[in-house]
Amino acid sequence: MRSYWLNQALEQSPARPQPLSGDISADICIVGGGFTGLWTALHIKETDPSADIVIIERDICGGGASGRNGGFCMTWASKAPLLYPLCGGQETVRMVEASEAAVRAIGQFCADNGIDCEFRHDGWLWTASSETQRDAWRGAIDVLDKLGLHPFDELSPDEVARRSGTPVHIGGVYEKGTATLQPAVLARGLARVCAERGVRIFENTAMTELGRASPPYVRTDRGVVKASKIVLALNAWAHELPEFRRAVMPICADGIATAPIPERLEKLGLRDGLAISDSRTMVDYYRRTADGRLVYGKGGGGIPFAGRVGNRFDTESSRPDEVRTAMLRNYPELADVPIVATWRGPATRTATGLPMFGRMKRAPAIVYGHGYIGNGVGPSYNGGRILAALALDRKDEWSECPLVGASGKLLPPEPFRFFGGQMVRAAVRAKDRADDQGRKSNLLTRYLAGLAPSGLIARTGDRN
Ligand SMILES: Cc1cc2nc3c(=O)[nH]c(=O)nc-3n(C[C@H](O)[C@H](O)[C@H](O)COP(=O)(O)OP(=O)(O)OC[C@H]3O[C@@H](n4cnc5c(N)ncnc54)[C@H](O)[C@@H]3O)c2cc1C
Image 1 (spheres, rainbow, N blue to C red):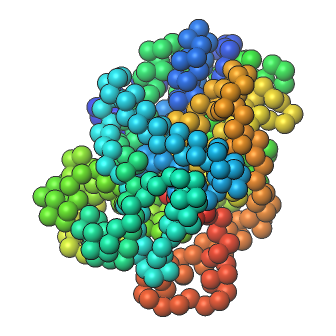
Image 2: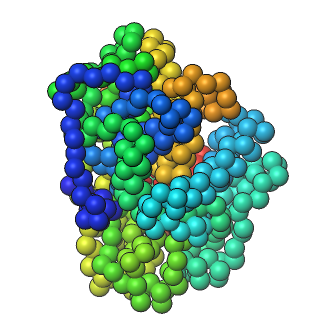
């Protein structure tokens, strides 16, 4: 099952997967052909054009979350309350500014390399759609103000309603740094540019064993890759490795796309590439596409037991009615519009709400980066910079940044994580329902919902 985005990208340019066959060696082997793996390869090539790089991808490049997300290419402005305690003031400013620069760099890279991913730099409307979400951005704005950064403009409820096309929102802020794009076209385009720059890409090739030896290796069904360095760019699938089982929680997110309705979206006021989300823990996020569809997504759609991600989330959405109901709460006038595609995919949550990068403790030639918590489209650009610096053993502001080696609180072991996670998820849903109806949920529900590792608010800016 492919997402709406990936099907569209493959119609424009069909995939011709080349699986690995036989044993090979390389300087650097990257496992995972999503944004993280692809940007890592491109940043390495930029620094060292002669580096011999191999990418191993179990599906096709962009087959994971990178080809299935909402296409919100965001900054880390909303992450300031998380960055500040970890990084301190100066580094938080650098990270936020670098994340803004990353969004611009992605747009420029696409323009320079003929990747027509409908990149539109029209900003993000971060809204509240119930009283409990009111002022969800206050924590971020307070930290940013203290640091002399002012990326958010506070808008009147009327202005939020005008820009979002719905009076459901009771408040909101606008950040101009965010862009929207067609994510699968970007992922497939990055893979093309990687190949043009000499990166060898083996698709339909899953890592079946990670050799934590010296030198390390990646075993697949039909061959072994030996490399001086291995980069794990596995997103939620990192959870399948024992080293990360308690640090990364895979969680599913869902998306739906309507038939093209450009005139009706125009009438609602949805004219450009504005990214819109609310502030509930299982965040709602929505935007129009270049061809005039509404893409509506929702986070918090399920967690796998015992870390078995596999292809469990490679299906149509398991809750299309719930996502459509959420869409109609905002846009009841679209009740007659057909939903032409639904999909879902694995995102990740970490205990800290920030991605993790580092070297494996007992195998330092293996480096890893994952855990963007639903905000990885833009940040994976700098995530790739961190991984490139680690893979090349460079000492710079990326390899030395506080996200490298930050351990974060560990999630509970199974079966507590799964059953606890189910209870927390049920509580978050019940609380969201009560909030939408203007009711107060009971104390236990509020307590359990508060244990959710992260939502869009202060702990965040996330979308899963
Ligand atoms: C429905 C949904 C909506 C989202 N919306 C947004 C959004 O609007 N904005 C935003 O910023 N973020 C969003 N996200 C999150 C975003 O998509 C991710 O943070 C980002 O794509 C992460 O990129 P990645 O390369 O790390 O992961 P991925 O793209 O998932 O790449 C990991 C790759 O590893 C491969 N792999 C796994 N196991 C193996 C193995 N054993 N061997 C070889 N390869 C393997 C997978 O097939 C996959 O291609 C969303 C996520 C989902 C699921």
